[in-house]
Image 1 (cartoon, rainbow, N blue to C red):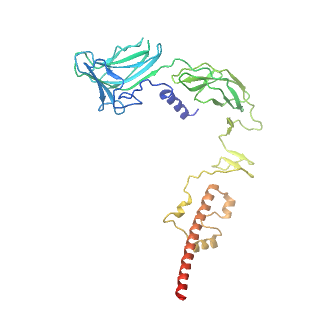
Image 2 (image 1 turned 180 degrees about the vertical axis):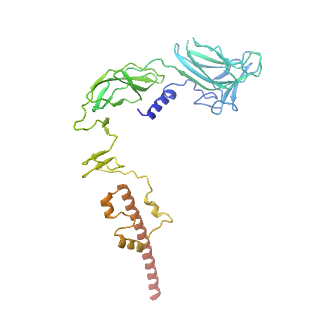
Image 3 (image 1 turned 120 degrees about the vertical axis):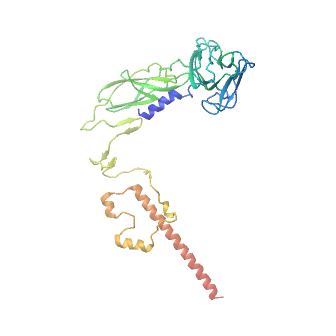
Amino acid sequence: MNKLTQILIVATMCFGSSFAQELHTESNAGSIANESNAITGWTPQNENVTTVSVETSDVYEGSYALRIETIAEAASRGKYTFATTANTQYKIVIHAKSLSLDGGFWSWDGFSDFAGVDFYGTGWHRYEFNVTASGTSATLKVYAGAPSTIGEAVLIDNISIQELDSSPPTQPGQPTLVSKTSNSVFFNWTAADDDIGVTGYKVYQNNVAKDTISNVLDYTADGLAPSTPYQFHVTALDYYGNEGPASPFLDVTTDPAPAGGGNAEWTKNGTTASYSDEVAIGSNSVPSGYKLAVDGKLITEEVRVEFSGTWPDYVFEEGYDLPTLEEIQKHIDEHGHLPNIPSAKEVHANGMDVGQMNKLLLEKIEEMMIYIIDQNSRIQSLESRLNNSSKKYFK
């Protein structure tokens, strides 16, 4: 598995919110995905001693944060209530900044294992809680400061509530051999299932973890030895890293090594065969800088050449140095071929680049069109002058 694939898998497992349902979904100043200039869902525990408002000048991320502030000498706190499932674990993340050093997260309702914490300091900090719901509703409480101090406040932002998943995926289906060579085995399997979502699979070779792949249903094991038995199985992974039970085993023996001094560097992935070095057909060598050499005729229905250089539309651009017909005639007389076109001798000695030759031919066609258009203009001008002369003469 290449490094890019590994990075994508890690990113998916770390940030794949599409697999984990976000429960803090209200459109308010503290939401991650639905940030807005509102306090929806967050209320003061007691409006006579606490205010909850929107902060715009000091935020953790985005444009807004929630500000909880003491306005009377009493325990001042803001709260947020959401629905829960009993005996289910939740991961709660809140970014907070205390403006008083006396605030904290205390006295949450609806969790059997909650432990409160004081704010760490006056800067923005990340607070994470893994808690278990005891009923069908829970309330988060954010204390602004000491009960006897008016004006103390705390800012909160980037609030996330997600249900933790402790259930692993189901067992993947029986791996099935698709193809094999002397040094590779390609197989597939049917998908596992998960209540939140399968994010990938772990491939085992001879009961040793060999690779972790994205959510695909096939795999090529390469670098194997010829005529050797191997055993493979896979397990499914979910967003939270839970690993499901092992699939049934696939037992397979690689093919013998190729005869005649060849090697086993050809591999097959589905219907695609690949080889990392040069290939010669009808010959035993490939010229330097090329990947394929065919000594003989080649027939195909279609050939597509990807061309990265400039295309001859530059012929029609202002300032293009179009040779005169006299200059072209002189070049043909001296060299026996068109300007900027390889001679027969050069093609015989060095061959011909199909893409480059098509470019040169189009260049000549476009130059010829300019000559034709110019000649047509000259003819029309001459006809017009002759017609005018005739009218004067016979008048």
